[in-house]
Every structure is written in C-alpha cells, then in structure tokens.
Length: 302
Image (cartoon, rainbow, N blue to C red; front, top):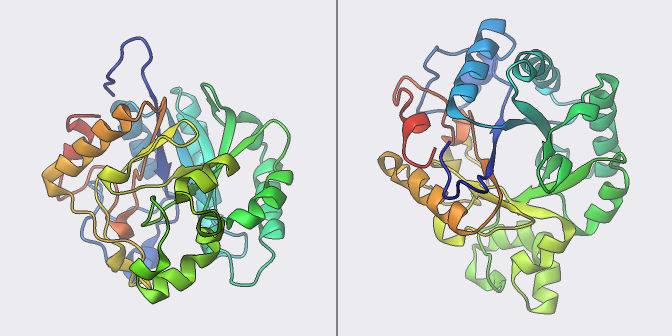
C-alpha cells in the first residue's frame, strides 16, 4: 500500500468475514461474487487464495468477525480463523478479532456473551498472539456495544489486550434526534444519550471510551483513538434491515475508495482500517470479484 509519508507510513488492517458456506450465500442478496466462485470459508484452497491476495494488497493485519457462541455462524468463523491464522502468520500477516455485539440476542447479558467468546479464543491460544499495533499495543475490537456497558466489558478484557469499539453512526456532529427517522432515533437513543445530555459531538462523547469509526461518509472521516476508516461502498438494503440505519454509499467506479483513503490519510491517523475485505451482503468488500477483478486492490490509495 502507498502512504503520504515515507517517514511514518500508516498501518493497514481489514475486517475479514469467515462465515461463508452454500446456505449463507443463498440466504442473502449480493451483487458481486468472489473471483474464485462461491467459496466455503473452511476450504483450505479458498483460505490460501485469500492469504495470497491480502498479502499482495499490502494489508498488515486482518480482523476476524466473531459472533456469539450460540450463533449458527460461530463454528464456521472459528474454523476459518484456525486455518487462516496458520497460513497468514507464515507470511507476516497479523490478526485480531472483532467481537460483534450487534449480533447478540436482545436482552442477553452481553458481558457473559463477551466472556464466552473470549474464552473460546483463549482456549485456542489465539489471544496471546493478536497483532501488536504500533502505538496501541496488542489490540482487539468490538462492534457497537452501548457506551454505558463499556466499563463493565473493558473490565472483562484480559490483561495485556487493548480493546477498541467500532461504531457506525449517521450523526457525528451535535445530536438532534428529531432530524432522523423516528425508528432510527429510537434505536440509537441509548448510543446518543451521553452526547445529547452534554450537548457535545457524538464523537467527542465516545472517543474517551475507546471508540473508533467502523465506516462513514467521506466527509465525516475522523481520526478517533488513532484509527481512521475507509470503505469502497456500502448497500445496507441487501440485508433488508428494519430500520435502515445507513444510506447507500455508491462505489462510483472506485472514486469513493480513493476519496476515503485521501480523507483517512489527511486525518493524520497512523492506523487505517478497511471495511472490508469481503462483506458481500453489504457490498462493502475489496476482495477480487468476478465483476471487478482485482480493480479494488490496484486502485489509487491502496
């Protein structure tokens, strides 16, 4: 990958999803297909191809999605990570994990769910070798825990690991719930509450808790806790979520990704996270596809 500074090049990570199998491909709409066809994430040949492509792209580390232990995709994600870690570490690609709080059952004890996932990872001795990100230490990630729960969750994080919480949100300025769809505002009010009560930017209310951006519109790019995010495009409508939280982010023949990289480097963040390597159901990947070939690996900025 290229950088704007030869003296201090940024570190690049990419979110990686290992839940793909024939039923999963059939369950969700997706406009693009992997260049090697509809792979099973457990297939050693598919893993080898992913490692080769990620290494060629210049990504320093991957962040494996981890859903709750009772989720139908959990074992698939573990099996993929098991094979990928062995292959990736041989070629110098680091790894970490994204504990997905958004997939946890409504009303569950999220701290216990977090404990259970970490216990499975520790059992495989994976936590000991998660990536040491320059300036941040050995880091793991979580997606979208509620801010009021973060202190309890952080207290359960094993010593020696630094957690960061990725979040997407449509309003990074002063929060005005009335400016959003009522269903969206109702869903996000718990996330927004500290900022609304203090009359400050949402980003300023959550950065002290360790939050980073998951992805965002280009003009909303911020360097939070030393991380900035980039995304080639996004289409939340594919999963037919109710309510729809995110607008479609058009790919614009690669221009969106270029502009996102420009904004991320201009933010001064020393670490850039790509959403994502292969999230097909949200049309947010840069993995080589039948439709694009390896265009998104070779576009300016990467």
